Amino acid sequence: MVTYTDPAQAQDFVARTGIDTLAVAIGTAHGIYPKHIKPELQMDILKEISQLVDIPLVLHGGSANPDQEVSDSVQLGICKINISSDMKHAYFKKAREILSTTELWDPNAIYPECIAEARNVIRYKMELFHSVGKADLYKGLRYEQRQAESVSLY
Image 1 (tube, helix red, strand yellow):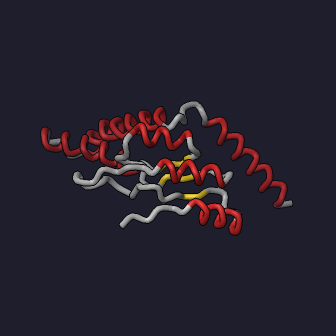
Image 2 (cartoon, rainbow, N blue to C red; image 1 turned 60 degrees about the vertical axis):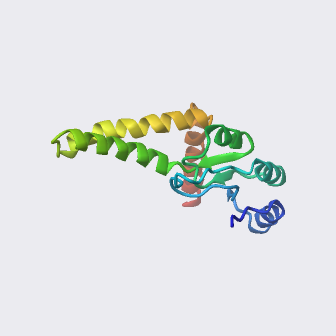
């Protein structure tokens, strides 16, 4: 049985705790899904939650989900998506390929191609998530945080 985030409870939780982000359960799980399971995001629940809370939402377990659903979730308020499994899958798939066809053993010879494959996944996901070109949003935030912390030290 799958348990989904109740939108009214999410609203109450945000109001009571003052949290700055909320991970929502809308049909994802961490890791790569078994072949017989097809993930399906409950976009109606996400839409309702996003209308009730005004903080960034987190999608735990964004790997192996349909691209269109993940892209749509960003438009509905998802601001952080975990894709470690997709990245590691690409990395180790390339490592297995290299190791099965060569006698290489030195990590410096094996890893560059693996890292390149992981980067390809990251680039693709960044496009999918509409996050390309937004680093400046975070650079400024870090600068402001540093300024606030240095002021509070004196």
